[in-house]
Amino acid sequence: MSSMTKRAQQRTDLLQGTLDMLILRTLIYGAAHGHEIGKHIQRTTNDFLQMQHGSLYPALHRLEQRGWVVSKWEMAPDRNREFKYYRLTKKGRKQLVVEESKWKRMAEAVARVMWPTAEES
Amino acid sequence: MRWWWQLNKSEADLERELRCDLELEEEQQRAMGLPPEEARHAAQRAFGNDVLIKEQIREAWGWVPFDHSFEDLRYALRQFRRSPWFAFTGMVVLAVGVGVSVAIFGFVDAALLEPLPYRNPSRLMLHRFAACLVGGFALVALLLGVIGLYGVTAYAVSQRTREIGVRMALGAQRSSVYRLVLGQAGLLTAAGLAIGLLCSVGTSMLIRKLLFSVQAWDVATLTTVAFVLALASLAASLQPAHRAASVDPVQALRGE
Image (cartoon, rainbow over all chains, first blue to last red; front, side, top):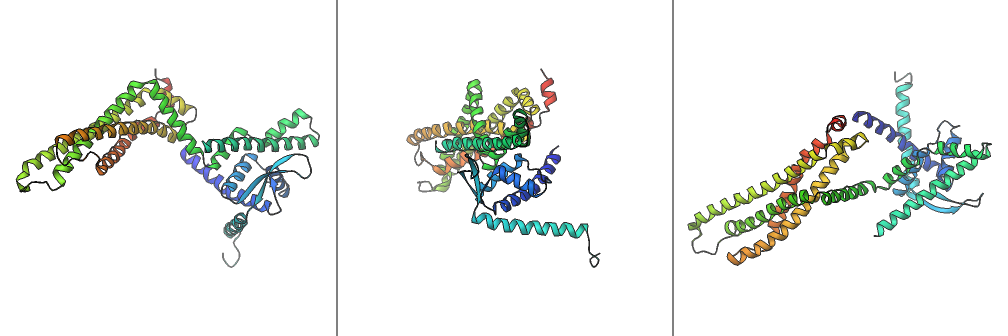
């Protein structure tokens, strides 16, 4: 049983890092609240990534804890209500670059195994 | 008290954040043409288990270990209140162990390690032998204290097998069972050490009146004994904790 939980842990870790990157990237466009971030990722990926709020909010709070985003209650421009808006910090921007290059390396490595080019094989 | 206030504020904030976003989701579902009742259910489905979400967010805040040890400590205190004799026995055993060891070590330190204020120290062989003997007693006292703690903890675990079984059946992790048992033993040790150290300082003061060159406040001895005893009692409570963590819930629930 413990090996199963460990495997599940590894899987969520991988997804977690990716989710962090997606959230940071989404916030490049400006401040957004949790719901908007989720909807944006869902819409941009044509509903391929169904945003599970269960992982979105813990991720947001984790990013805030690390100082990559800051949050503030602000009035929504289109409706008369306050939402908790998250905004990218300078540290967060740097982290986004790091995450992006990490992801790229990972994708390249996977691609090399999956679709070997003529000269390499 | 400030962290408590901060915690409450963060909790309220989190509650508000989740509620606001849930309401927005509900609104959007309604805008898509769902009747109000169904829109609410759909929004809640899309949101997922909010208790779980909150738990994970608290984990992200990094307060959970702190939170859990606080709970464990409170639970241990409640256990002591429920069975004061158990706690009393454990504490007294430890306290006596500490007190005796500190007093004797203090004496040995003065007689054995420091140059004695005699003209011809080599004639004091007998004294040294006696000191070694007394030091041996101190070690025995320490050992007895540790064995006492082991016995008390092991007894507590055997009494609570069923309770631990229920906890595990309900999903308690092995690590939390470890923490439960070790927390209780740790609290006992801390209390025992505190009482023992207080008593030993008192005893040393008494001895000081009878014997020369024994210090009442020998910080080195006090810390050494406290450290050794703390370490030894951790070791002594590890085995019962391990046994508690390997309780088979089915067996524990079927027993009795």
